Every structure is written in C-alpha cells, then in structure tokens.
Image 1 (cartoon, one colour):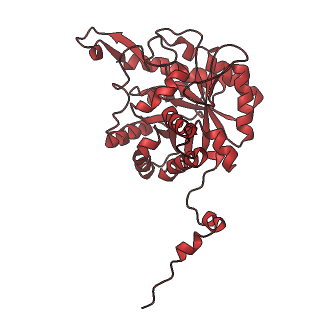
Image 2 (cartoon, helix red, strand yellow; image 1 turned 90 degrees about the vertical axis):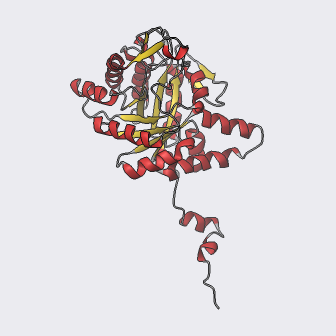
Image 3 (spheres, helix red, strand yellow; image 1 turned 60 degrees about the vertical axis):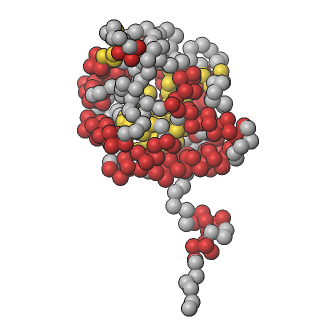
Length: 332
C-alpha cells in the first residue's frame, strides 16, 4: 500500500520555504511603545525591575521618540509622573501637565508619530487609586473606602479633552470606571474632537503582572487594591460583556490587558468583535523574560519574539510592548 508523501514536512526543510508558508508575521507596524515621562531635565533613569526601560524627562523622551519612529514603530503610549499628587488628580487634566507638555514637544519634533494617551488617575492621585476615594468606615480594610465612580468620570473626561487639546492622537482610558467611554466620547465631541478615536482598555484584569509598572509610574495604591473595579482573572465571559459595553458606548478600538495570561480572551474577542484589537504585554511579562534571560535560562530574542507572535496569533493586530524597539531591530 502506498502512503501519500508528507509534503508539509518537505516545506519545513528550508528557512525560505518556512517563511513562504508562515501564517502569522510580526512587523514593527503593529507595535506601540510605552514611555514614562517625569519632571526635570536630562533625566534618563533606568527602572530597576525593567532593564532597558527608563523614566525620561521631556527633553529626553523627544530623543527617544525620534529613535522609535526611525525603527518603523508607528505609535507610542505616554504615561506621566507628575510633580505633585493630590486627591483630585490635578496633574492628569491640567493643560500644562507632564503628558500634555510631552505631547506638544513630540508633535513638534516627530509630527508623524502617533501618540496614545493613557487616561487614568492612579499616577496623579495621592492614594494611587484610579478614581476618587470616599472613606466609609467599614469594619475591615477592604470596606473602609469606596471608589466614587460617577464623580470620577468627570475627571477622566477632563483628562481626555486636555490630552486631545495637547495633540494626543488616540485617547486610551485604562481606569475601568463604569461608563467612562460614554463620558469621554461625549466630552471629546462637545469640545470639537469628534474625530479623536478612543482605544478602550476594555478587558483589564486585576493582575499580579503589573508590579514593575507600579514602580515605573509610582502608582501603587496606598491602601487596598484595585480588584473592586478591575476584572477577576477567572471571568472570561464577563470580559466579553465588558468589551461589548465599551463598544456600545463608542469605543473605536478595544484592548485586553495583560496579554500572555489572557490569550484565550484575546482570541474570543477577535471572534466576537469587528474592531481593531490591541493587547498589552505588560511589565511583569517583560520583566520575567528579561530576568530568565539574564540568568541564562532562556534565549532572550527567541522567547521575546515567540511571546509577541503568540499574542498576534491569538488575534491582536496592535501590541503594546516594552520589547517594541528590540523586536523592531530584529524583524524590521
């Protein structure tokens, strides 16, 4: 009895043929590079838990933006560390805030680089939460405060308008307050920014992978945690409901965060929603690969690219990643 020739095995014998039949391809055009901006001048401070990632002053981040654009990476995401924090997140929405000043400087220097603005209040709040906090005096630490959702929406909307006015191209709310997409869309439209798109952190999970980011952005909560408004990692069906609500409220793009532990959520979102889909490879994912590579346990470049490929294969066409520059240099 004759057996059919396994032609697929033959195709795998050379790199040229493997490349020809490859189903998923990484390109720098799908990357977004997160950047942390801090007060001062000539500041380029490496973040201890994120090797190769820095807190930049405005003058230094402009230099970084030039390099990012030269590598074919089309967009950055800005996170700000304000001079002063308070209980109204003033630094998030004032017109001369750190993100607003940075956006103007980058637009003047690299006008074709897309700028996404993270719209959240945690970095700017003295307590580190993503909304206004009300003390209620409960019997346990978890019940001694609550996040005042609706009042927080006003601050988020003000932040979005302020960022759009400064030249931010894409508004990216990450706070997970209920109704924030509707509030932000209404505010943007009312101020003449009808064409400014919103990329919603639609399924943002209460994850243990955010630790290094909180060091980078100085945004760890002073008390409690964020599980009351971020999503339970166990709930994939709830994630679809959250995404659907944001789409109904006017989101133009949707995001799943973190990426690697939630590839199933990314894949399900891709099947259900016909909008551009982003995934955020967060600081903990980055730090684990860096740490393992530094110890000689894994091949850094191979694992980095494999992790990014898995996120795209799951369905994300936009990947926010701290590896953007390194990956672009390898595949560009």
